[in-house]
Image (cartoon, rainbow, N blue to C red; front, top):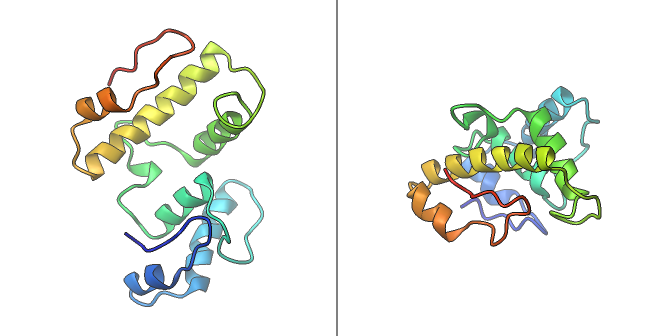
Length: 146
């Protein structure tokens, strides 16, 4: 949609679609989110766009797929970053740390909320999508229901 390859982003088309907004103004919006999270300001737009940076970018361009638009309970930045970092270090992603049932449920709740927003934005039937895109095996034997 925005012509961005997350592994090697070129922001030209995105900035043009934003009526000529500059890289500096986009970076300023991203840094505002980083400030809320008490993270250091970025000096330039990301050279590679990881998960958190992708959501920061979507927020900064006022895309329909923003964490604050998740309903009925918006996903706040602190929660999102915290859960994402835990996921990154767990066996659910890249790490080796085992996940407690409570941690799994928190992450699952966040993912289900974001999944619901995705289906709304893309005008997809959520129940059909859930049938197609569920975990093959739930580590705690819970059923993925929406």
